[in-house]
Length: 141
Image 1 (cartoon, rainbow, N blue to C red):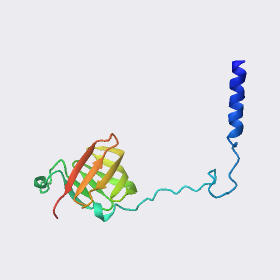
Image 2 (cartoon, rainbow, N blue to C red):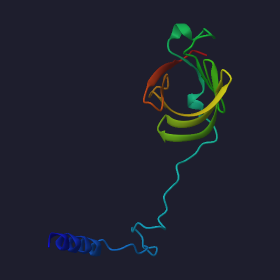
Image 3 (cartoon, rainbow, N blue to C red):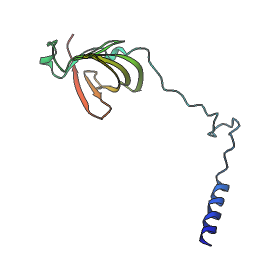
C-alpha cells in the first residue's frame, strides 16, 4: 500500500511539472531556444594592467626579483616563466580572468589566473586556481 502511495505522489508531481514541451519562442519562458549571452572575450590585456609589478618598491629596480611581474598586451612575464594569454575575460571593473599558455624551465602548461586592480590602479591581486593570492604594487616607470 505504501509503495502505491509513493508512486501516485510521484505521478502527481510529474503531472504538475508542465512536462518538457519547448517554449515555442514565447518571451520570458526558458527553453532550448533561450539566448544566453556569451561572456565578452578580449583580444589583448587592457592597458590599465600593463606595466611592471613587484611585491615591494625596493625590489622594483631588481631585474632578478622573484616577485617580478611584467604585463603587456600580449605577454605576461613572471620570474622564470612567461605566458601568452589565450583567453582574456573581463569579470568586473578592473578584473580579468586569463587562461595562459605558460613556458618556463623547459616545460609548458596551461593555467587560469584571476587579476584584479585596486581602485587607484596601483595594486594588483593575482589569484591562483587554489585560491592563493598575491598582491603586487605598480612599480614606478
